[in-house]
Length: 459
Ligand code: NAD
Image 1 (cartoon, helix red, strand yellow):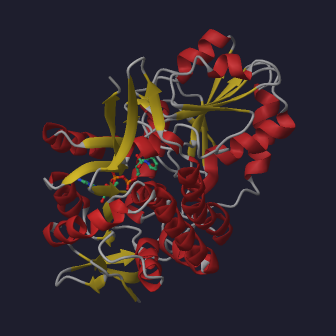
Image 2 (cartoon, rainbow, N blue to C red; image 1 turned 180 degrees about the vertical axis):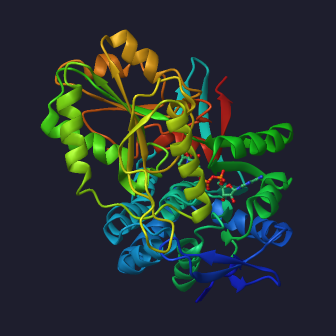
C-alpha cells in the first residue's frame, strides 16, 4: 500500500481525510491519497520561491530540466511499474509510451530552451527587445489516461520559463506524480518550485483555478470540466490553455496501402484501451475496399493486447454506449463483452451499421469502442469527419491524396499514413470544443511566459 502525500515547499504531508486509489486490474486499494481542499499554503510558498528561480538564465533552468530527465531515466522501470499499477495499462505501453515520453518532455524542453534567441525588431530610429518574463505561479491540472506523460508536458516548459508550479494530477492516477515529486526532492530541485497537491477536481482543482495568485491555468481533461475551468478563470483574466476531448476520425481512402493502414488504424483505435484523446474512434472506409479492410482489421484485432479501462465506473459508461449503439441500430462486429475476471476489463469492441450522426458515433466514449462507417466520395468522408462538436485530431490513409484531404479536416492535428507520430516542436491542441490554445514548442514557451516589449529610442 503506497501512501501518496502532497509536496509543498519541499515537504511531504497528508491530510486527515484520505481517498482510496483503486487498481483497475483487480479492484484492490493500492494507495491512499490526501483529500486536499485548499492551496493557500502551497501558493504562498510557490510565490516566495519563484523570484529566485525566475532570475536564473534560461540555460541554467534548462540544466535543471536535464537533471530531472537524467534522474527519471535512471528510474524508468519504476515509473513504468507505477503507471501500470495505477492505470492497468500493459507494462510495455507504460515503459515505451508513458515513461519514455515523460523523460523526453524534460530533455526536449531543455534543448529547445537553449536554442531560443532573443527577438529584436529594428526600426529606423529605435530597437525593440522582446522579453519573455515568467508569469509567476501557474496551475497545472491533468487527467488519468497518460498521467506522468501529460503532467510533465506542462511541468517542463513551466519550469523552463521561470515559473513556480502548483500541479494537480488526477485523483484516479496519483502515483507517478508523487514519485516525480520524490525524485525532484532527492536531486535537490529548489523547494517550493514544484508543489504537487492531490484530491478531487471540484475541491482542490477548483481551488487552484479560483486562486487569485495563480495567474495561468493549463488544463487537460474532459470538455465538460474545461467549461467549468473556463467559466471560473476567464473573469479573473487568467491565461488559459484547455486541452479537451475528441472524437477523431481515421479516414481510409480507396488507394490506401492496407499492409500499413490496417495495423496503423488498429493502433489508433485501441492503444491504451482507446483512452487517448487522439484515438481514432471512428473509422471511415471507402466502400470499394471496405470488405477487405474489415476482414483484415478484425483478424489483426484478435492479437492486439489491451489492458482494462481505468475504473469500473468508467467501464459502466463505456458499456452504456455499447447498449446505446444497439438501440441506434448498430451491429457488434467484435467484442462487446466483459471478461469473467475482477477489475475493469472490457473486450475491444467494433460496431458497424450506425449512422455517422448517431450519438454513439459523435459523443466521446474514451474507451475501446470504435464505429465503422463507409463512404463513396471525398465530400462524404469530410462531412462525416467534420460532423462532431470536437476537432482534436484525425488521420488519413492514402498513397496519393492524404495531405489534400487532411487539410480539409477541422482538427488541430491530422496525421497522414501514421498516427501519434509526435515532433514536440509542433503545435498541439484542438479546435471547436476540443480546446483553446496550443501547447508544444514555441507555443508552450509563449503560454508559460509574458511577452514584454522594450522599445529603445536612439534619437
Ligand atoms: P476530467 O475532466 O474528469 O478531469 C481532468 C482533471 O481535472 C482531473 O485532475 C480532475 O480531478 C480535474 N478536475 C475535475 N473537476 C475540476 C474542477 N472543477 N476544477 C479543476 N479541476 C477539475 O477528465 P478525465 O476523465 O481525467 O480525463 C479524460 C478526458 O480528458 C477525456 O475527455 C479526454 O479526451 C481528455 N483528454 C484530453 C487531452 C488533450 O490533450 N486534448 C489529453 C488527454 C485527455
